[in-house]
Length: 168
Image (tube, rainbow, N blue to C red; front, side, top):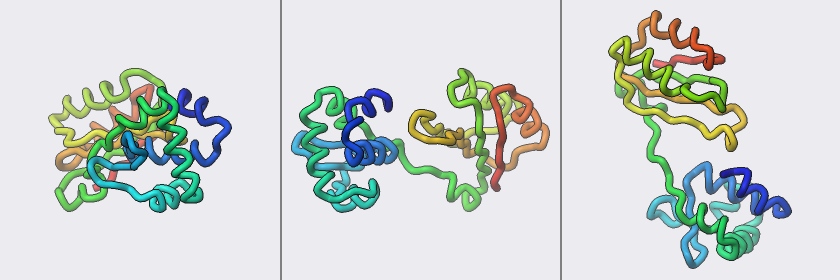
């Protein structure tokens, strides 16, 4: 998806920055060129600050997005995923497992969740970065309770896992 957005905005540096912020945060554009996160309107100035561009570039990019069917199709339908529990996990007595894995390898989520299931550990939330949008993508799992050392060792031993960090 990112490569097609990139190719359509390749000669528009500010537009590319704006599109990246839109995709990272689930910001969509409506038929009139206004920006939203869910049902919350986002001002041009706020989007410009987040993208590191001039506010006028946001208006120009909105018009361009709406004029290109492929861009409009993606950027008018994107939605935010929801709130991450990772930053409040300790308050909820959860643990957070951040895994750096081979980004395009199949089965990373399956392999890790199988190990956790084998230890009767419940996954409350799973968030995976898109390897085409994030330079160092990771899989973030919020799990109930504490992880036994044996589960961590099994996960570390998986071929797809490069490194992992556990936070309580």
